[in-house]
Every structure is written in structure tokens, then in C-alpha cells.
Amino acid sequence: MRTIFKTILLSSVLFLTSCATIISGSRQNVEITSEPTSAKVYINEIEVGNTPVQKNLKRNQEYNLVLKLDGYETYETKLEKKFNAWYIGNIAFGGLIGIIIDPITGAMHKLKLEEINGSPKSGTTYDMENGKLFIKISMDIDSNSEKIGQLKKPE
Image 1 (cartoon, rainbow, N blue to C red):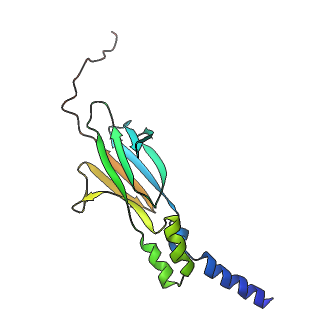
Image 2 (image 1 turned 60 degrees about the vertical axis):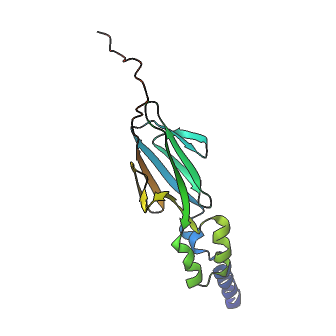
Image 3 (image 1 turned 90 degrees about the vertical axis):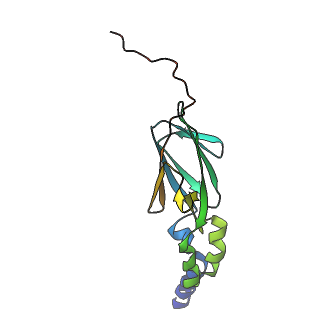
């Protein structure tokens, strides 16, 4: 009985150890908001909704993010994959399987906004909390946009 228990325990340690996959998962929750709201959000040229929008994206790829709203300049940036420090846990705890599994699942990465000289693009703020990425974008008014008319309330 003790031998079976030890075998199961040892097998679990060897086959289920992949730190980043267990801690972070293979997907990351990304919430995108804008000022003003209701901007159309495109991820890799596919419309995913209007701000505020929340998507659960795979960690092992990069994404092109575009926001469009009439009367405002189109906003473009990238979500880049960066190294996830939880991957190092495989080396510290001897998870040979984790060293293989985490790159396959994409858990060895985390998504972050594109940075220029160490800062996000102008008008953009972001925060990471418990692996979730919150992005807020302040859209600039398009100077080439013409005002056609103004709706009036009936008297």
C-alpha cells in the first residue's frame, strides 16, 4: 500500500509540475476601456466589440490592437508576449516536464502593451493585477473630422 502511494505521489510530482501553467494558465484576461467609451475594438483585424471589452487571449502569441471611433484618431498598438517569471519555478523545483509543457501551452509568456523607450504609447495607461491586464486608452480628436450637423432637442 505504501509503495502504491509513493508511486502515485512521485508520478504526480514528475508529470504535473509545470509552474507557469499551474499558476498563470495558458490564457490571459485582457480588459480594454477607452475615453470616450464605445470605440470599436479590433484584435488582429477582427472586431471583438465596443469598449469596455474583455477578452481571454492566448499567451503564446502577439496581437495587434486597434480602436476606432467616429471623430477620433484611430489608435493602434500591440500586445507583446514577455517572459513570465513563474517559468523559472520549473528549474527551482526540478520540474523537467514543466520546462517542456510551459512553452507548449504558452504559459511561459505574459501579455503586455507595446512600450516605446520603456513607456506605453502616449494616451495609454495599463495595470496588471493577479495576471489580468487592464488597458485604458484616451483617444485624441481627429482634426480632419468635419462636423456635419448638431442634433437638437424638440421644444
